[in-house]
Image (cartoon, rainbow, N blue to C red; front, top):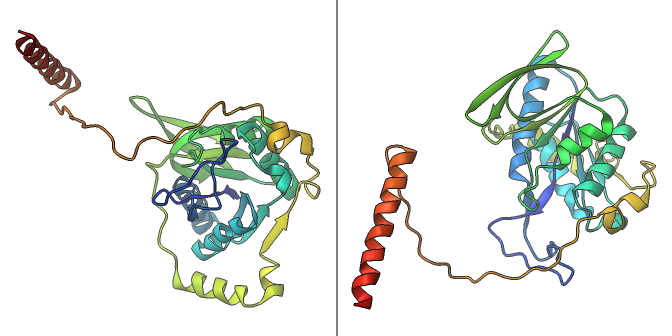
Length: 275
């Protein structure tokens, strides 16, 4: 199994914007993308029930290796960091290209797990794009999963309810944030990972750093060169927002009635003021 994880700016910290419109990641605190925790949990559940190996893959600058160490502490077996300056400013198209090349580099994979989206992108495009590039069946917004007789029985969230599916392996799964939360780290995993970090040779057998050349990726399809998305303009919103009123009715129609009543009341007030 492969679990795709990402280091993102901590949502509680302030991150500026570079002149080219990209996030100034150097100034922000870092954390494991919250959505990816649900993907990692699903991989851990399969491993606990059926065995197997979990390889976590991340793409980013050298400090992103921290999320791979974090994944080992949760119970992952290995980690691969795709790090290359030529990957800077990759959009979803370039990111999916690079990550699908990593998966091909790893060889036979039965299940690829990804989070629904990332907090610094919010597109939910990379997982499905990887599935298309690898020509794999995919299930998005997955909530429940069972591996049985070499197939995956899935329950995914759709508008107004859920949908049950059965797909064959290999497959790609994007996990919804309504799925099982990531369980706390076991002391034994944390202790073993700390011991690994003290031994450079041993940690080198579990955490690997690779670049575009090693995975035989075309640099023209990565980074800015491979990213058709253009940020036209960025600006900083004010620190202080406006007031907000929430209308909570017994049903949607009741909420609308409350809103309309308030609008009518405000209109009457304006008319009285004008008089």
